[in-house]
Length: 263
Image (cartoon, rainbow, N blue to C red; front, side):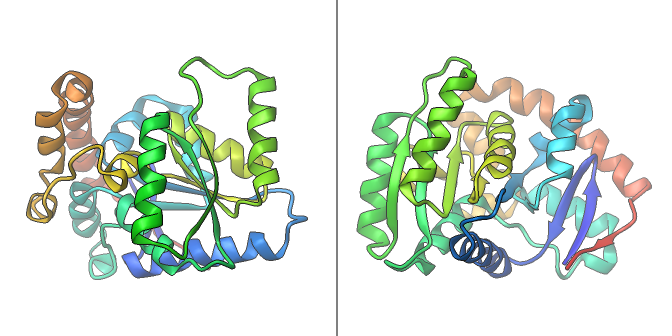
């Protein structure tokens, strides 16, 4: 596995199937060794992450220390293949909703066991119903929709206790970018779980939001589809984020980083 930068964000270059395998292997490890002091952090990063990381050193540190950082956006794959031609054949889009579907499909009653953190109670209810319908062998051991206010230390302690007592191996986190990336880092440092920041995957799998058609995803215009669907919520994200990403992409192609080989 190789890791290379686009902007300040390090991406682990692999296929979708290898990403699903990496997540399930990490879950098997934490399930087998419950005395581990920490878990595995998994991030799905796109052009918006690249833009945010340029101005947020703390987020850059979180992603740099992430155990797995997948390339969630098609435009990022284009830049990665152009900047690192030696990785072009291996550099695939690894889309959060697709990995979640793949891991759920690979689950059995023995594990991995899943916990859902984030979104709204209605979305979580719809998501659990969709998982039960489409992935009947996947076991969801708990869910929690936290309130929108900043959690206190006691809130986080109780959250961790609920997750740990549930017996979860994987915690899917859908709290929005970048909040979910910070939470994934915190969970992986606190509990023996695979903590995964999956963004809008909860809504897409639950059917509460419409996912862009595959052909729109392939041509890199999923952001435009989502902007048209939610212009007020996503307007700044894409207008500002895309302009910063273009600058970061150009800088990366002019001066790519050294490639890091990882086990």
